[in-house]
Amino acid sequence: MTKTCVDPKKARKILDRYPSGDGTSLIHALQDIQAEFGYVPCEAAELLCEHLSVPISKAFSAATFYKAFSLEPKGDVVIRVCTGTACHIRGAQTLVDELCSILNVAPGKTTKDLKFTLETVNCVGACAMAPVVSLNGEYHGNVQPGTMSKKIRGGK
Image (cartoon, rainbow, N blue to C red):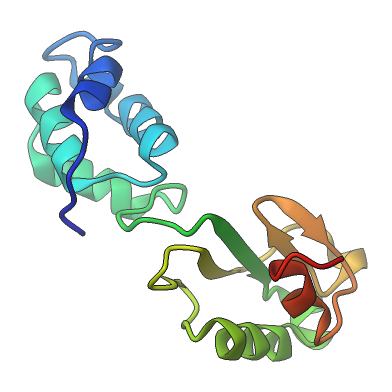
């Protein structure tokens, strides 16, 4: 987990929504922390566990079990390439390779400037549009090599 400086006032504002000592609020509080900071910072998790009276291992266990949580900062643009069967057959790996080359980052990682995070996902449920790439949740179907580089650089 990356150690960063978190504004304790922002974290406290989130924690104040949950009863002190009530560990049943852990997942909801982690979701709120993720929504505020874009990931679950170590300091925020520590404050949360202290507030809810739960061991830090329980927060890490939840944050690593659920894919919705990230323990590392994400980029301004999160690029998700579907690698499910239909997308794989229609060239998803070529798109992943191209994006890795353009961004100089491996899948699951974020660029050093925190502009882009590249992820692969098993299926987005849009097989008829394969291959599918999402940019911050906006889905693009029938993506061909070369088109994503224009989109992530601001072109259409």
